Image 1 (cartoon, one colour):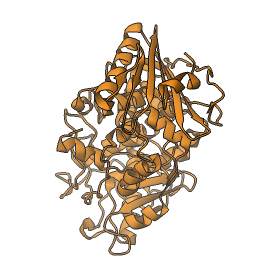
Image 2: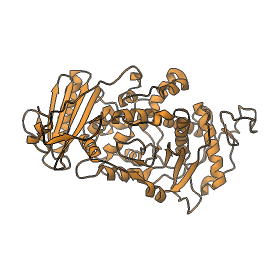
Image 3: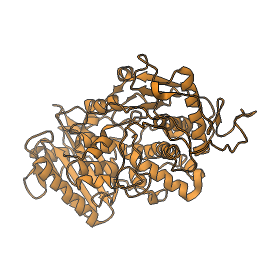
Image 4: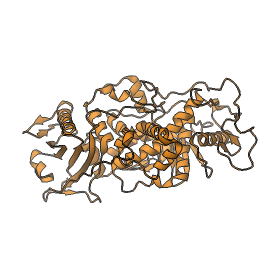
Amino acid sequence: MQLRPVLLALLVVLAGCGGTSAGPEGTATTPTSSPTRATTATPTTTGASTTAHPPTSSPTPTHGGFDDPATDRLGWERGYWYDESLAVNATDGLNESERAAVVARTMARVERIRGLEFESTVPVAVVDRETYLADENVTATAWDEQVWEALLLVGEDESVESVFESFYGASVQGSYVPSEDRIVVVSESGADASPPTIDRRTLAHELVHALQDQHFSEVFDRANLTRDEALARRGLIEGDAGYVEDLYERRCSGTGDGSWSCLPRPASGPGASLDGNMGVYVAAYQPYSDGPAFVHRLRQRGGWETVNAAYADPPTSSAQVIHPERYPDWSPATVRVPDRSNANWTRFDRSPPGTTVGEASLFAMVWANGGTETFHLQRPSRPHRAYNYTHPTTAGWVGDRLVPYHNASGAGGYVLRTEWATTGDAAEFAIAYRDLLRTRRGAERRGENVLVVPAGPYADAYRVERSGTTVTVVNAPTVGALDGVHAD
């Protein structure tokens, strides 16, 4: 797929936030983006700022001066007020004392924007990329391979593990590790070779995660969540951090609520090698794109108190984050897939045996396989949204269930059952799915509802059936095996 340079630049430059050990279906290592989230038609790239953005005059303190308060105050941390100037020269990196001052003032600024007090100091470690890569650990199981193959995003010619390692490890700019209550920032200059650099946006973003952990730690527990539920929860977590990051950056540029003197941003990292895996990125990036707009909508409803309340009742589907008006009263439909396999095929030993992929993942599948106009993604429709995940082919989604299967020889198959708001929505998705198999994957018809992809990474048989508002896709290595996976 040919992409304009601006989109390519946006997609390949990541700044991850999460832990350093997770699988593709896991909950820790996930990408966030450094681009300015779109408030105009075309997002900007993540290049370094070459100049700071000082206010036209000295900041006017709202706290009566820059003396340290007798007790901790919102907007003051470890000796620095949020609007206090720093005697720091960031052009040649930051030494230890300079880093301490930058972290303290950034904590104060995050407090000032978010309206929450840090309960404890957050350690910030700076490492070079080589060190970070040595600690990177992405794992994937055979079940993960089937899930990503079912989304037509990672075929049988690639390993899910290697795909995720290729762009997480090379492009992550920072992470917050909840289990260790610490932030790791990647310095492109090399932590040992010279004083390391810190990107102000990355630092502010990760500090919001630390603030979340101190006030709403339960939201980081994502055990037993489906893929869609995990994306939804990340929409709140990353949305809050991304939204604060946006507000922070607007003050640095003098376009927000007040102006701050900010350090220049260092050069960005090398970027990821995505090659043909843009769809994987789009699938993983949705919380970072729609999350800030979702949190912005919550704040419009009732201020930061409404955002805080959402942590006790987080969204349960990526559809709620894509369409904020659906939160909190709308819920996805429960979709079940009865086991109709024969003795040759079994479900994976998991409880429950399947997952829900959700609207965001289905959009990524359709987009990556040519089912949408390529640059639809670049047309965000609301403030603080980087990309546009709303599309007629997937907007009518109300539920799904994906159940992978395997046999004794190691071959795989799956059943993907989706539920739609109307018969028209279901028909549109079924038509689009069959069309992308034919046009993108070279599928040939073998009967009314069966298509066969004869070659390539998705060389399998597919049965695509619609019944009312339900579309069921059955996949197997051959036409003869379709009924073995799921009897018609």
